[in-house]
Amino acid sequence: MQNYSTHQPNPSRFSSFLSQPHQPFFLMGIVWSVVTMILFMLNYKGILPLHLSTSIFHAYAMIFILFSHFFYGFLLTTFPKFCTTQPFPQSIYIRLFIFYEIGTLLFIIGSLFLTELIIIGMLILFASHLFAIRHFNTIYHTSDTSEKSDPFWLLITHTAGLTSHLLFIIGVISEHFNIEFIAWQPFAVSLGVYLYLIFLTFVIAQRMVPFFSYVNVHKPRHFVLTVFTLFMLKILAFTFDFYLLNIAITLGLAAFLLREFLRWKLPIFTSPAILWVLHLALFWLPAGLFIDAISTLAEFWFETSFLFAGMHLITIGFMTTMLIGFGTRITLGHAGQAPYADKIAIMLFWLTEIVALIRFLYSLGMGLGLDLSWLFDLSATLWIVLFVGWGIKFGPLLFRGKSA
Image (cartoon, rainbow, N blue to C red; front, side, top):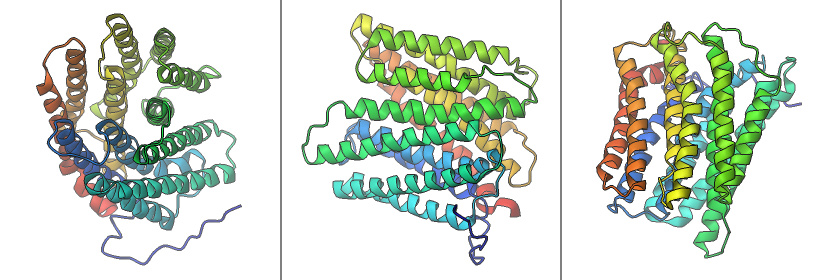
């Protein structure tokens, strides 16, 4: 059994900034969300060449840099609470933070100048990912609580993410040395998006949204297991282009989730903004899955491509909305302020929905053969505005923490 030391680093000028794990990870998540989107946007338009394909850069940066920053900030804070154990020692999450920033910086610099630096950065990020899972696992196994279902699934989804992470590294190395690695990209991307990003957000949401809403729900016995299994089957169908099977699984998953969420009877129309944004995000999941199935059917029928319309709708509509909602609540609450969304925060909530819809319209237009490239520019620009605005609004709180 591993025992965590209670020793804390000596105070420094950044002691307040590093006093809680969500602060550095959230703040740098904001920074990297802007930087990576700018690089992706310029590369997609042919303005800035990168030493990595556009699709791989975008997928890896979104999964293992941008969103993972926010996941660590949230889980390092709440995972011990789920397990009713002591918080993570500062020495642990600071070490993770430092190495994650080093890996991210090397990946970004390598993308601009040198492929070898990309690989080194990815290896450091993978090692950091493994380091985090190891300590989550320690917390899990030393916990005396009888209810470990949600922490268990959080470990499972992180393991899926680690597998996707490894596939990305092998794939990039293979391409660098001109070694054929069949079908690695669709499997790595779908595994990373659906079973890491989406499923992890779902596991947190299905626990925390009813809790914050003061609603007692009685979920089916194998609720989370069923969702996990259907996502896994969807990933396999997506990877091997089994269109009809993918459509059937996606529709089944959408119907199952919608039926369950409606059964919870959440106070959607009577909740304050800090809460209804989470309700909105929750229903984006079945809605996005339904649209994903329809767009996949249209691709199969008309032999076209909607540029992952469904996947983007779920990741922005469900996951990013949930991220903005939870992130706002955590930032305010852990800074000693009431979890209340003012006018600016509400504007940011609605801006998230606008970004989701514009990105979907871009995919729809491209699939129908319409020249709507300006919608890509608009969606990417609004994404940057969203995170810059969130950073301006909550960055000072994240930097100062409890001293604010």
